[in-house]
Image (cartoon, rainbow, N blue to C red):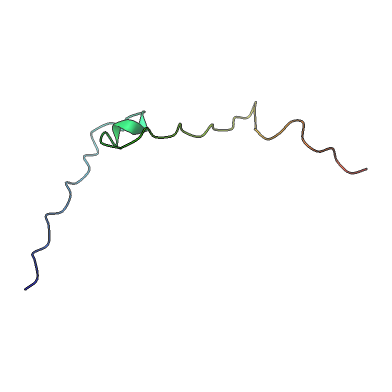
Length: 56
């Protein structure tokens, strides 16, 4: 015989705010999560300011 399907996960409540810390979403994670990526801003678009010079 086939086992019955497990109960579905509870529906996400849209009234609950999303936490700023991603570790709060996975409190039982075996290791710390990596830091979030640094977002580029208009003042600092990112990239390597030095780098390889342009060809002549």
